[in-house]
Image (tube, rainbow, N blue to C red; front, top):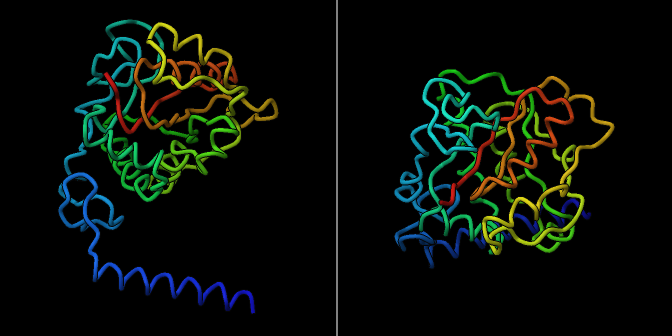
Length: 244
């Protein structure tokens, strides 16, 4: 009986939603035109404007990398970063709605677009696992989900790569990076992440580290450092937006 009620309730919600869409057609949260994409939140034209940076860039010196995923400019071993674009009005609104308005369907197109950037890169090494940047448990409980995990999950589905959710975790609650000056951000996240001691599968592997936004790169650097200390061979990063 409970299964019947559950299925019937979902049917009512679906039919009601379709009916309301006929009366009040969903509009794009960015431009106000009809939201004609699958998520019914952002229109296709606005999604098409999110097309990715011209190439991955070095997390340390921010120079674009055109020939390989190794930076030839700064000589520092930091991850190459794939990004959908700069933290402009489009991506800022999308990510704000994803994180703070609970619009999880927005993670789908972001993840698919990042997956396309990665597969289009000519000299892409084989990625063994995808790992999202974790949220502290209290912050994830309050939000209801980890936006980086939702984006990473879609990338994994598109690329057919296993998502590892629990191997990287937050050890303490940090202050929000966006509210701190750049000089204080590295100290804020130092020692705030760890890898499960029982995880042996990461040794010698290439990992794609996923987050929603990077600014100074402090969070990506710290997570990358922790993964490399766990004997990960190589870390590549993917973010929805790069703030400058």
